[in-house]
Image (cartoon, rainbow, N blue to C red; front, side, top):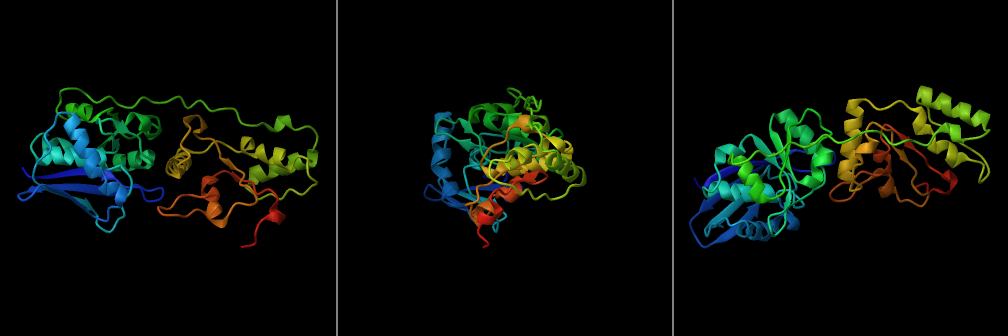
Length: 308
């Protein structure tokens, strides 16, 4: 069969829309063409995939290969589609059973030796794969993050060969191990001595979900007090915790499972730009306001901040 379909996930903010990797082999001079609004990093996957297949002792088809990343109007970036592209080429050339790919989704960047490397946004992809009723295969570097999606069936593959062996029933791809989410201790309000009025204001703000303005001379303890506010807030619900983890996953800062269910505390410098506060860029990345979602955003030196 010269046509194969593999499922993967894109990254669009904190969402993970489905991407269908369609691979077609045809006659003509050997060439590989990638279509579907793929950026340079995706087009470069041709060389990574070719080297990985040859290192794994697979045959790279000497035919015209057309790769379509659908939907065509969704921008594709990064090396997250490498594993799906490689498996699609193997399925289209008859080296892997195409039917074995239909119940899976694949994420991972390929090294030249076939090693699988982590990508950003694994947790939103795991949640979306669970909603679609498919199994997600991720590199070991994304296992701890994807394990936070308790209702998702996530498997781990270290190399391209290991992934193909799991698809061919020669071995079982291991499920992710649930990570220890014992929370780290938060700064406690008991550390503050005195400041009875300010402590009372913090308690009222935490109980009612109010904003709070702290005014005082430098060194009187405003930052110390504000940093203790998360310890007064209740732990997040599972839905809120998944939202926070998804934001952290796509932010590039990484996700610490030990902060699971803890409210975030963000304190950007007063010279931070508007883009750093509200987010942006291409592809869009969350700013400090988004990273403080369901938590505390502390704006120190408020009068020194730009009005723009």
